[in-house]
Amino acid sequence: METGLWAFGAAVVSFALTALIGKALIPFLHKLKFGQTILEDGPKWHKGKQGTPTMGGIMFIIGIVVATTAGVLLFSMTHGGLDSVSRFVFVGLLFALLNGGIGFIDDYVKVVKKRNLGLTAIQKLVLQFAAAAIYLLLMALCKDDTSIMVPFVGAVDLGFAYYPIMAIVLVGIVNAVNLTDGIDGLDGSITFFASLFLMLIANVIGNHQGNVIYAAAVAGGCLGFLVWNFHPAKVFMGDTGSLFLGGIVCSIALAMDMQLILLLISLTYLLEMFSVMLQVSYFKLTHGKRIFKMSPIHHHFEMCGWSEMKIVLVFSAFTALCGLGALLLVIFG
Image 1: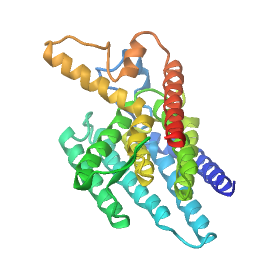
Image 2: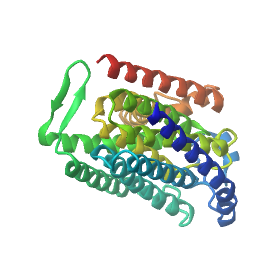
Image 3: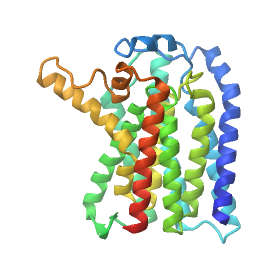
Image 4: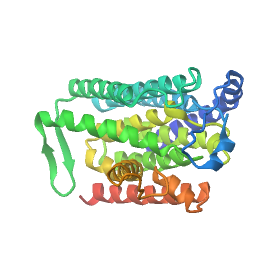
């Protein structure tokens, strides 16, 4: 009950800070002409969003970092000091910030240098694997544990193979979250539900008060951002925000040794990524044929006539069902 109050406080602070920063940040981004360039290969009606400010993820990055840091430190000070589990929170925040930094560079290249595609795929992957390596190294220093929790089985030790496997998982999911950011309110809404169920899982397994507070702050920050990003969006999070959120989702789950549960909670993101991989592979193999009308798959549903709000609602509901399934696996597995 007490942890719940701390989590609620962190969520409220994160929400309020994010929403208030947006009030000042959006006009500032307009003034700098940091507007989104809409690519020609996207849905034609998205051209109306040309010039909408991007890099808006800065607002929830500040809100989440401040609320999490204050919440975890204050909780620790009143409960005997910073324990090893709570230290994972700050390692996780660093990982998220490193990915957010990569996203910021990518957005900067797109907006200021006027290179629509930003960093090259190779440049981005090199930086992301470097961020993953730093994170895994710090986690190894915090705890010498290379096991993962398998539902109905228990801990399974992967040995040294844990590190390359986890590096691939981290980079994959971070990029999947990035690909999900394609329509108003989608990434923020999905990540709200992902963080909400990660918070519940952290509470169920116990001794993860720091991660409960962390996940609650993320949920609050996502809601604060949706104040400005829900359709019709007044600002986009950009790669700055989406890569940061990808780092957060991964770091909360890994801190709890919930790597397989992470895959279930991240299923919506992963389906978005796999839809792109399938589309590109099939296009090359068949010399021009397509499986989907457009990828990522949220654009396919747009081309089928779904409104942006309907897509957000359905994808969020699916994420909530995945989160519920993950929670039940933790409780009964």
